[in-house]
Length: 245
Ligand code: GLN
Image 1 (cartoon, rainbow, N blue to C red):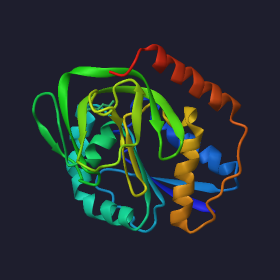
Image 2 (cartoon, rainbow, N blue to C red):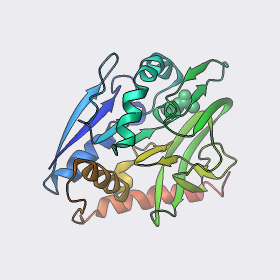
Image 3 (cartoon, helix red, strand yellow):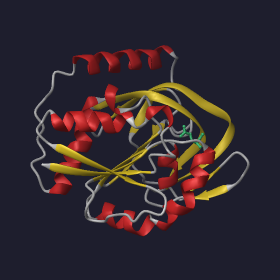
Image 4 (spheres, protein in one colour):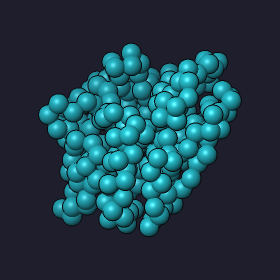
């Protein structure tokens, strides 16, 4: 199958090589005989609704977020429409924050979000930095990654987190939650990049994209030896950082 990926603002939101997540998706799809057609959706570009199976937006600092926020807000209706029609979406850190209702930076400046996820984010001076490990009970798996953010993300009552923090800070360092899930949308603070060390999650996203594209969603298992080691090293680093914040 040909899967269509829409990469939002690759020139602005690509901190910690978040672009690496796309490389993982391309390769894991290729190994199963699927082709990924990755298109950049940049400033002033139209969102090709109905033509994208998986949207992706990476992280960025406040400056880059401020540069894209208004443009992204203008793209909110087509993005919401695509998600309601079953498109998948992965958003990391700065991109994740902008999927909520707003992001208020440390200076108190409020940047509009697109209200796709039931949350908002407010920054505080002390940054939350380090390795992080999550338990995703909905999937029976763990996710390991690296976080570095000033924003504290608060989920609305009843919102589904991506996981529970085993070690690290997560959304706000208090709730014990990390990330957010809604339909086929996944928002998270985890960089690393995230997907090389969490291959199950890469496959989950590919399966979601395949479902949107109307293809068979089963993906043949891959050996994943290096990936397992990468996950174990990252998980261990997070654990040795101490208990939950
Ligand atoms: N503005 C964000 C924060 O520090 C973005 C961080 C990031 O994407 N690494 O909270």
